Length: 173
Image (cartoon, rainbow, N blue to C red; front, side, top):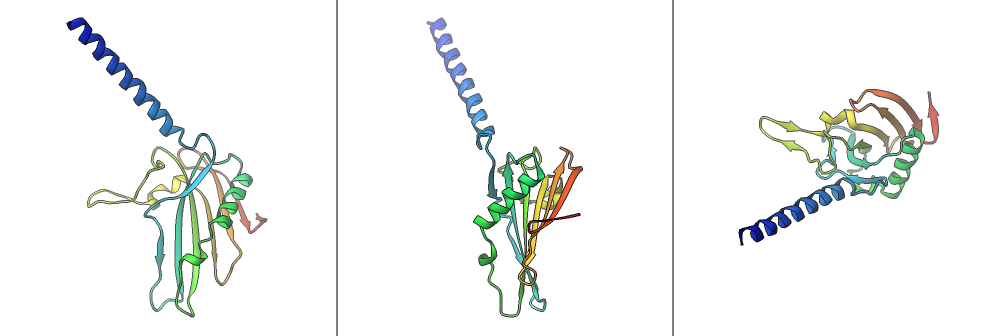
């Protein structure tokens, strides 16, 4: 009887180990190796003082499995920005100008896909602490609608290996 119970227990433990390892693989492969972009929750910022003319709108995104080439990365975020315009999201008073910033980050050990800001008393974790994983920024305004792209190839430590800048489709040296 004891041997039968041990065998059943061993089967249950084995089944649990296999299922947990498979679910871990599924989480790591959630994007299936394909490139995916999504907005990082709880990171949108809209701010401006009443006596200032400019209202700043910042949105932050995660790119899973970004393309390796900088031109391909620029084309990817350009298509994403066209498909997901943010201009209509922030309405401002007449006479005010909106400045838009879209920031795109790669997934890393420090910035996992389910990352959320943490405003703890002794320990804070904000996106400004993750500049090593920032790989694309786009900026423009109501006054200057030309989009300025900065695209980076970075080492795992965040060192810039290569950088390209565009104004709309024009490469800037």
